[in-house]
Image (cartoon, rainbow, N blue to C red; front, side):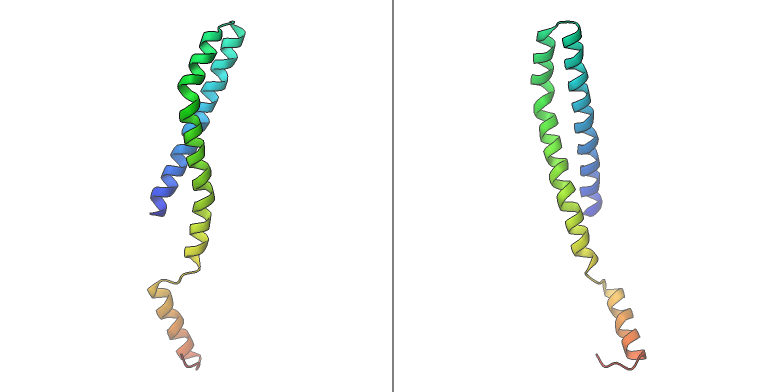
Length: 94
């Protein structure tokens, strides 16, 4: 599951940064060439998808580290068995 979330995060991050850059440079071109219609159309076309993708990236950027920290404190079965074996060899009763 973490791999899927990481891939979604990376995709949304790259996509929103790309759309944002296209949006800004297109608006700059519209200003330079005095094409107000270009500025409005590019904003109407790209702003909403860029905002949605940035929201997804932001939420995942907050959630993924929290999930990783929570799961890193949980021992796998193999780690538990190793810990039990180590404590038995050291003379501590479990």
